[in-house]
Length: 284
Image 1 (spheres, rainbow, N blue to C red):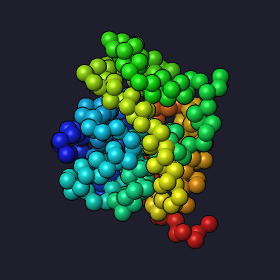
Image 2 (image 1 turned 120 degrees about the horizontal axis):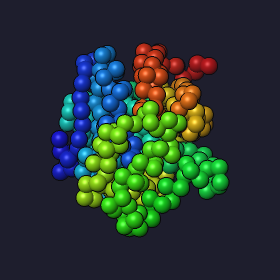
Image 3 (image 1 turned 60 degrees about the vertical axis):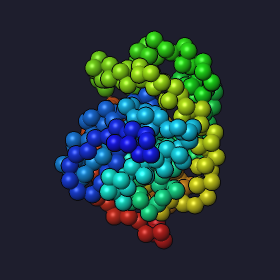
Image 4 (image 1 turned 180 degrees about the horizontal axis):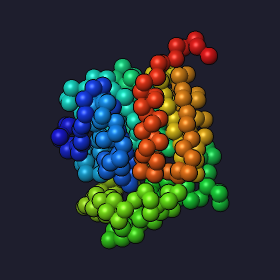
């Protein structure tokens, strides 16, 4: 489907209230392969490759998360969805926060999964220190102009497989060779790596936008989920100042790629959250 001339890849399944799934980088809607069918037993599920990720075309402008969120909003309205539950992982959560903050009338519930959201995450999340280095180095590398593309071109499998293995608790359990191959296919397309790196180059604009959004609390229930071996409880800390109706969970034995490392537990948390009553502003 195209929105303002930008071709967007998506998958839909199930019936009922709408639940939107946004993957991160360097992934695609394939990241939700275990979660989508479980949710589709009860809900209408729409998995979307954000512009410039997976098989979707990039925006014609820098992909700060405000611009990307506006594109996703237009897409959902064209599809006939005026109010949705929004679930984002990694950069998908960056986009999800921007959409929930800018257009709260569209988002009934928001779930952020293991994502250091620019402008919300505590500064330590990006600290270039020995203990943080494996978790943050790519923010700096990916944001450099032109160099990442030059170094990675023709070596996409080497780069991506290293990322998946180094950021998972048990990569062999979470990713088959075919799964890795699917992501390599996506990001070996001409211009695909540059489109993904551009999200990191736009991070300063995204951070400034989010700092402005953070002046107003999100009105909808929010669930912040972290992998025990990655962001863990830092997810709750990031969202505490922007959400009054906040739930949080840490998934044991899981690192960064929550939808693929712990799909059953993630689905349980999502179903519980979707079924829960919202907390009134003066409660607790």
